[in-house]
View 1 (cartoon, rainbow, N blue to C red):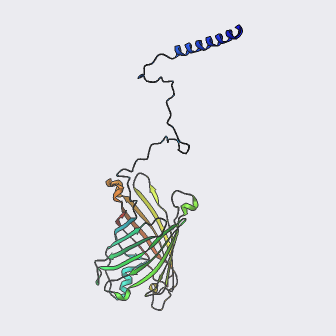
View 2 (tube, rainbow, N blue to C red):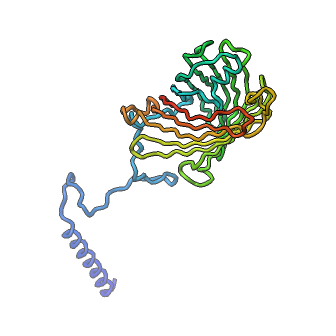
View 3 (cartoon, rainbow, N blue to C red):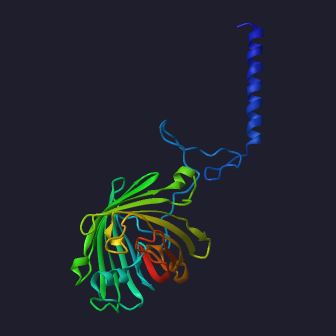
Length: 320
């Protein structure tokens, strides 16, 4: 090998040795168990090609005792109430029974039980069964003035909720007044149409056909809105509805009178106060509330039976 080539090789070796000596001076001597320097990057875990990167958020914690609610397939809605009058579809029920049987009851508070058991089947219709009972102590025939079992299903097909069912009207010891009806109700979820978090008016249309005693139609449409007072547990719900009857003999004012027309309207307000907030009841035991009711009912067609009355009451409700 010629002298110039040897000179170039020796020069390159000298430069490599110098660079290595400078690197050793910048990086101090460490023992095997010494912690790594702060500027040294930490080793990263090996990720497969289809494995997502680790999340910066922690796993969701399970709900606490107070936040846990009923996610099961069976739900309850129970109301126990006292009312000054039992007004149903614009007619005082005690007066209606008195006209049908000829025995009048005095005006006293009506004790009412209204219970509904629902079965959640996911996207399928949700069957339900229930019973309503009105107890009037002053009734001269039976304290259990009316027993009203019902059944059907609710089907949420957004933006509507379709309900179809059957109701049997039983009046103990007054079998000549018993009847039954098939009905349907369509509620519009206007929150979906208006792109709101909560419904605005929740308009509904209700239709019932009496297939037993009267062979007539009852139609009703109404609206409502929930005003939630934050951090108080109070919800105020104004309601309004209007009814039309078609060839329905129950609403005749006189035996040969009219049975078709706009029959009555209701304007009212429902107040709810959460007992969960007041008594610190965990939601795992259901939603408990004290409810107050105030209504005004007015007749529309003077040829049809309807009350003009202010009435109301109070009670307790459990939804679970």
